[in-house]
Image (cartoon, rainbow, N blue to C red; front, side, top):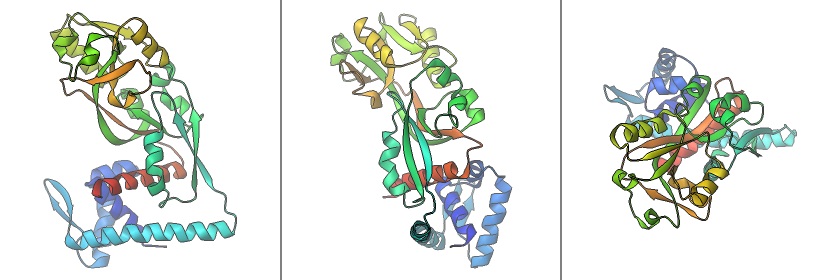
Length: 300
């Protein structure tokens, strides 16, 4: 329906580099560069300005980028209509959904993403947080669901699973409503002195381990309470025992008696999609469509 180089060009433009695009496509950066060079040679003008700072679109590249996205969307709609006439089966993408790993962020992007893959359907698959899930998410992905929306950090998963980062989330402190710190607008590390703070045990996330190391080395007055995983019982324990917990603002509303107060630090965790590196083409298309929807939101 359109030049095969067009989609690659848009992927490189969205990523801002040949290497990042190559990583997502599971090919070498050199292969990406050669294809882009061939595309530019075919067009007769450069699409990117290359510098030490990275890639930026030329004026011609900006036009091709904007029009190319419209062409791809229109092509997908036409194919969808034609396939519908022949009762072409729709493909299902299974998205894991849990209390702490909700899929609502992705569902909010789906109307835009649907323009790029109209033959895909979503199926929400509920699951429960378990220590085994944190340690070996790859066992669940594929067998139970295809995509997870998670906070990244597990080094083992990084090797076996592919990730698409959507945002960074600043770590904060979950506080029971009856605790004095519930009235604070901002919690300093010194405010945690003498308190008990629930943290998932060492080794599950190097982002969380960084907070643990800071507290252990420089603020021994804070008592760290190890928990195997975060789940509904963690929030109940937070309230029942008047404990604090390392948290993120997006968990507001999980428990009516726990609020998440910003902390005076810059510890963050990346958030996004996690899926198997050997995921079938439909899953790869879904991830690419979400990436395009995110790019559209960012440029709007």
